[in-house]
Amino acid sequence: MLSHDVYFTLKDRTPEARKRLVDSCHKYLAGHPGVVFYAAGTVNETLRREVNDLEFDVSLQLVFVDKAAHDTYQVHPKHQQFIDENKPTWAKVRVFDADVASA
Image 1: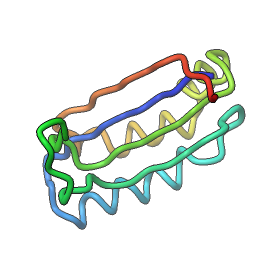
Image 2: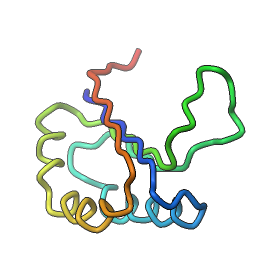
Image 3: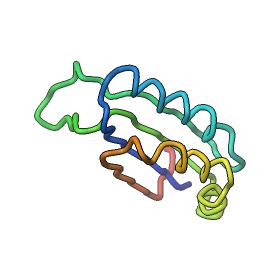
Image 4: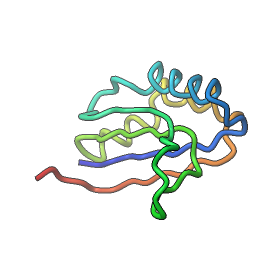
Protein backbone atom coordinates (compact mmCIF):
# COMPACT_ATOMS: atom_id res chain seq x y z
CA MET A 1 0.00 0.00 0.00
CA LEU A 2 1.06 3.59 -0.48
CA SER A 3 0.40 6.22 2.18
CA HIS A 4 0.02 9.77 0.86
CA ASP A 5 0.02 12.35 3.67
CA VAL A 6 -0.29 16.05 2.89
CA TYR A 7 0.11 18.92 5.36
CA PHE A 8 -1.18 22.34 4.34
CA THR A 9 -0.14 25.61 5.96
CA LEU A 10 -2.64 28.30 5.02
CA LYS A 11 -2.12 31.98 4.39
CA ASP A 12 -5.23 32.61 6.50
CA ARG A 13 -4.78 30.35 9.53
CA THR A 14 -8.22 30.98 11.05
CA PRO A 15 -10.59 28.18 12.06
CA GLU A 16 -12.95 29.25 9.26
CA ALA A 17 -10.24 28.95 6.59
CA ARG A 18 -9.19 25.58 7.97
CA LYS A 19 -12.79 24.35 7.81
CA ARG A 20 -13.16 25.53 4.20
CA LEU A 21 -10.12 23.50 3.15
CA VAL A 22 -11.25 20.39 5.04
CA ASP A 23 -14.69 20.70 3.40
CA SER A 24 -13.01 20.99 0.00
CA CYS A 25 -10.93 17.88 0.73
CA HIS A 26 -14.12 15.97 1.53
CA LYS A 27 -15.82 17.28 -1.63
CA TYR A 28 -13.02 16.52 -4.10
CA LEU A 29 -10.67 13.96 -2.57
CA ALA A 30 -12.82 11.37 -0.78
CA GLY A 31 -14.03 8.27 -2.57
CA HIS A 32 -11.41 7.88 -5.28
CA PRO A 33 -10.91 4.38 -6.72
CA GLY A 34 -8.14 2.42 -5.06
CA VAL A 35 -8.31 4.30 -1.74
CA VAL A 36 -8.46 2.06 1.32
CA PHE A 37 -8.33 4.91 3.87
CA TYR A 38 -9.20 8.61 3.64
CA ALA A 39 -9.23 11.32 6.32
CA ALA A 40 -8.89 15.09 6.46
CA GLY A 41 -8.80 17.34 9.49
CA THR A 42 -7.15 20.17 11.36
CA VAL A 43 -4.09 20.42 13.55
CA ASN A 44 -4.62 19.49 17.19
CA GLU A 45 -3.04 22.45 18.95
CA THR A 46 -3.47 20.93 22.42
CA LEU A 47 -0.73 18.36 21.77
CA ARG A 48 2.45 20.29 22.48
CA ARG A 49 5.24 17.81 23.12
CA GLU A 50 8.72 18.62 21.80
CA VAL A 51 8.16 16.25 18.88
CA ASN A 52 4.82 17.74 17.79
CA ASP A 53 4.99 19.73 14.57
CA LEU A 54 2.33 22.46 14.72
CA GLU A 55 3.40 24.27 11.56
CA PHE A 56 0.36 23.20 9.55
CA ASP A 57 -3.37 23.85 9.53
CA VAL A 58 -4.96 20.95 7.64
CA SER A 59 -3.84 17.38 7.19
CA LEU A 60 -4.93 14.93 4.52
CA GLN A 61 -4.27 11.20 4.74
CA LEU A 62 -4.90 8.78 1.91
CA VAL A 63 -3.80 5.17 1.70
CA PHE A 64 -3.93 3.62 -1.75
CA VAL A 65 -3.91 -0.07 -2.60
CA ASP A 66 -0.82 0.52 -4.73
CA LYS A 67 1.24 3.13 -6.57
CA ALA A 68 -0.90 2.75 -9.71
CA ALA A 69 -4.00 3.88 -7.78
CA HIS A 70 -2.03 6.84 -6.41
CA ASP A 71 -0.83 7.80 -9.88
CA THR A 72 -4.40 7.66 -11.24
CA TYR A 73 -5.59 9.88 -8.36
CA GLN A 74 -2.87 12.46 -9.07
CA VAL A 75 -4.21 13.19 -12.57
CA HIS A 76 -7.91 12.75 -11.78
CA PRO A 77 -10.01 15.82 -12.72
CA LYS A 78 -11.45 16.12 -9.19
CA HIS A 79 -7.93 16.21 -7.70
CA GLN A 80 -6.88 18.80 -10.26
CA GLN A 81 -9.98 20.91 -9.50
CA PHE A 82 -9.16 20.74 -5.78
CA ILE A 83 -5.67 22.08 -6.49
CA ASP A 84 -6.93 24.81 -8.85
CA GLU A 85 -9.53 26.06 -6.36
CA ASN A 86 -7.40 25.91 -3.23
CA LYS A 87 -3.78 26.54 -4.22
CA PRO A 88 -4.09 30.34 -3.83
CA THR A 89 -4.87 29.82 -0.12
CA TRP A 90 -1.73 27.77 0.61
CA ALA A 91 1.39 29.26 2.16
CA LYS A 92 3.16 25.88 2.22
CA VAL A 93 2.40 22.27 1.34
CA ARG A 94 4.39 19.26 2.51
CA VAL A 95 3.81 15.79 1.06
CA PHE A 96 4.98 12.54 2.65
CA ASP A 97 4.63 9.36 0.59
CA ALA A 98 5.53 6.00 2.09
CA ASP A 99 5.15 2.34 1.30
CA VAL A 100 3.20 0.86 4.22
CA ALA A 101 1.82 -2.47 5.38
CA SER A 102 -0.53 -3.34 8.22
CA ALA A 103 0.48 -5.89 10.84
